[in-house]
Image 1 (tube, rainbow, N blue to C red):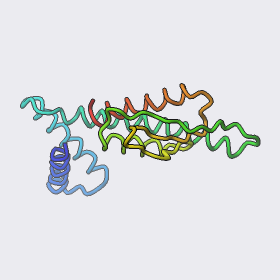
Image 2 (cartoon, rainbow, N blue to C red):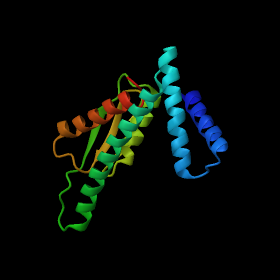
Image 3 (cartoon, rainbow, N blue to C red):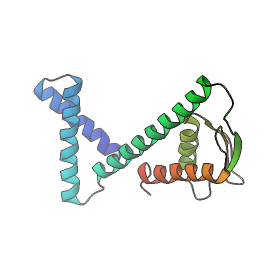
Length: 159
Protein backbone atom coordinates (compact mmCIF):
# COMPACT_ATOMS: atom_id res chain seq x y z
CA UNK A 1 0.00 0.00 0.00
CA UNK A 2 2.74 2.46 0.97
CA UNK A 3 4.77 1.69 -2.14
CA UNK A 4 1.74 2.18 -4.35
CA UNK A 5 0.92 5.50 -2.67
CA UNK A 6 4.51 6.65 -3.20
CA UNK A 7 4.29 5.55 -6.83
CA UNK A 8 1.06 7.53 -7.19
CA UNK A 9 2.77 10.62 -5.75
CA UNK A 10 5.76 10.06 -8.06
CA UNK A 11 3.46 9.85 -11.09
CA UNK A 12 1.77 13.06 -9.99
CA UNK A 13 5.13 14.86 -9.71
CA UNK A 14 6.20 13.61 -13.15
CA UNK A 15 2.90 14.77 -14.65
CA UNK A 16 3.29 18.18 -13.02
CA UNK A 17 6.88 18.47 -14.31
CA UNK A 18 5.82 17.55 -17.84
CA UNK A 19 2.86 19.93 -17.94
CA UNK A 20 4.50 22.75 -15.98
CA UNK A 21 1.41 23.15 -13.80
CA UNK A 22 2.56 23.68 -10.20
CA UNK A 23 -0.80 24.62 -8.70
CA UNK A 24 -2.74 22.69 -6.08
CA UNK A 25 -5.42 21.93 -8.67
CA UNK A 26 -2.70 20.64 -10.99
CA UNK A 27 -1.49 18.30 -8.26
CA UNK A 28 -5.00 17.03 -7.59
CA UNK A 29 -5.54 16.37 -11.30
CA UNK A 30 -2.15 14.65 -11.56
CA UNK A 31 -2.87 12.53 -8.48
CA UNK A 32 -6.26 11.46 -9.87
CA UNK A 33 -4.68 10.54 -13.22
CA UNK A 34 -1.97 8.51 -11.45
CA UNK A 35 -4.67 6.92 -9.31
CA UNK A 36 -6.52 5.87 -12.48
CA UNK A 37 -3.37 4.44 -14.04
CA UNK A 38 -2.62 2.41 -10.91
CA UNK A 39 -6.23 1.22 -10.72
CA UNK A 40 -6.13 -0.02 -14.33
CA UNK A 41 -2.73 -1.62 -13.75
CA UNK A 42 -4.01 -3.35 -10.61
CA UNK A 43 -7.06 -4.72 -12.43
CA UNK A 44 -4.96 -6.08 -15.29
CA UNK A 45 -2.34 -7.71 -13.06
CA UNK A 46 -4.73 -9.00 -10.37
CA UNK A 47 -2.79 -7.27 -7.58
CA UNK A 48 -4.25 -5.61 -4.50
CA UNK A 49 -6.86 -3.07 -5.41
CA UNK A 50 -5.13 0.15 -4.36
CA UNK A 51 -8.11 2.35 -5.28
CA UNK A 52 -10.49 0.21 -3.23
CA UNK A 53 -8.29 0.52 -0.18
CA UNK A 54 -8.03 4.29 -0.62
CA UNK A 55 -11.83 4.44 -1.08
CA UNK A 56 -12.35 2.46 2.16
CA UNK A 57 -10.01 4.79 4.06
CA UNK A 58 -11.82 7.79 2.54
CA UNK A 59 -15.18 6.30 3.60
CA UNK A 60 -13.94 5.82 7.16
CA UNK A 61 -12.63 9.39 7.16
CA UNK A 62 -16.07 10.70 6.17
CA UNK A 63 -17.72 8.60 8.90
CA UNK A 64 -15.20 9.82 11.48
CA UNK A 65 -15.70 13.46 10.45
CA UNK A 66 -19.47 12.96 10.84
CA UNK A 67 -19.19 11.62 14.40
CA UNK A 68 -16.58 14.28 15.18
CA UNK A 69 -18.94 17.07 14.11
CA UNK A 70 -21.88 15.50 15.97
CA UNK A 71 -19.87 15.14 19.19
CA UNK A 72 -18.45 18.66 18.84
CA UNK A 73 -21.93 20.12 18.49
CA UNK A 74 -23.13 18.13 21.51
CA UNK A 75 -20.26 19.40 23.67
CA UNK A 76 -20.69 22.94 22.32
CA UNK A 77 -24.39 22.86 23.21
CA UNK A 78 -23.49 21.71 26.73
CA UNK A 79 -21.11 24.65 27.09
CA UNK A 80 -23.36 27.43 25.77
CA UNK A 81 -26.59 26.39 27.51
CA UNK A 82 -27.26 26.58 31.24
CA UNK A 83 -27.77 23.41 33.20
CA UNK A 84 -26.07 20.07 33.36
CA UNK A 85 -27.20 17.44 30.85
CA UNK A 86 -24.12 15.24 31.00
CA UNK A 87 -24.35 11.65 32.13
CA UNK A 88 -20.67 10.79 32.60
CA UNK A 89 -19.57 7.21 32.91
CA UNK A 90 -16.39 5.16 32.65
CA UNK A 91 -16.86 2.12 30.47
CA UNK A 92 -14.71 -1.01 30.45
CA UNK A 93 -14.52 -2.00 26.78
CA UNK A 94 -13.12 -5.39 25.66
CA UNK A 95 -10.37 -5.37 23.03
CA UNK A 96 -9.92 -9.10 22.52
CA UNK A 97 -8.81 -10.03 19.03
CA UNK A 98 -7.33 -6.64 18.17
CA UNK A 99 -3.66 -6.17 17.34
CA UNK A 100 -1.66 -3.54 19.24
CA UNK A 101 -1.84 -1.24 16.19
CA UNK A 102 -5.61 -1.63 16.01
CA UNK A 103 -5.98 -0.97 19.75
CA UNK A 104 -3.85 2.18 19.46
CA UNK A 105 -5.83 3.41 16.46
CA UNK A 106 -9.15 2.77 18.22
CA UNK A 107 -7.96 4.42 21.45
CA UNK A 108 -6.77 7.49 19.51
CA UNK A 109 -10.02 7.73 17.53
CA UNK A 110 -11.99 7.60 20.78
CA UNK A 111 -9.80 10.24 22.41
CA UNK A 112 -10.00 12.54 19.36
CA UNK A 113 -13.79 12.56 19.56
CA UNK A 114 -15.03 15.35 21.86
CA UNK A 115 -16.78 14.02 24.94
CA UNK A 116 -14.86 10.75 25.08
CA UNK A 117 -11.43 9.88 26.40
CA UNK A 118 -9.46 6.67 26.57
CA UNK A 119 -8.32 6.69 30.19
CA UNK A 120 -6.35 3.44 30.32
CA UNK A 121 -5.39 0.42 28.28
CA UNK A 122 -5.09 -2.75 30.35
CA UNK A 123 -3.15 -5.17 28.18
CA UNK A 124 -3.22 -8.03 30.70
CA UNK A 125 -7.00 -8.20 30.89
CA UNK A 126 -7.57 -6.85 27.34
CA UNK A 127 -9.75 -3.86 28.20
CA UNK A 128 -9.91 -0.17 27.35
CA UNK A 129 -11.25 2.14 30.02
CA UNK A 130 -13.17 4.95 28.33
CA UNK A 131 -14.68 8.06 29.92
CA UNK A 132 -17.85 9.18 28.11
CA UNK A 133 -19.57 12.50 28.87
CA UNK A 134 -22.89 11.29 27.48
CA UNK A 135 -23.45 7.64 28.36
CA UNK A 136 -26.94 7.50 29.81
CA UNK A 137 -27.15 3.79 28.96
CA UNK A 138 -24.00 1.67 28.90
CA UNK A 139 -25.33 -0.47 26.06
CA UNK A 140 -25.81 2.57 23.79
CA UNK A 141 -22.28 3.82 24.48
CA UNK A 142 -20.81 0.37 23.83
CA UNK A 143 -22.84 0.09 20.60
CA UNK A 144 -21.42 3.43 19.40
CA UNK A 145 -17.87 2.27 20.19
CA UNK A 146 -18.56 -1.06 18.47
CA UNK A 147 -19.70 0.81 15.36
CA UNK A 148 -16.52 2.92 15.42
CA UNK A 149 -14.38 -0.21 15.88
CA UNK A 150 -16.12 -2.10 13.08
CA UNK A 151 -15.88 0.79 10.62
CA UNK A 152 -12.24 1.33 11.58
CA UNK A 153 -11.40 -2.35 11.05
CA UNK A 154 -13.16 -2.40 7.68
CA UNK A 155 -12.02 1.00 6.44
CA UNK A 156 -8.48 1.30 7.73
CA UNK A 157 -7.36 -2.30 8.15
CA UNK A 158 -9.50 -3.94 5.45
CA UNK A 159 -11.01 -6.60 7.71
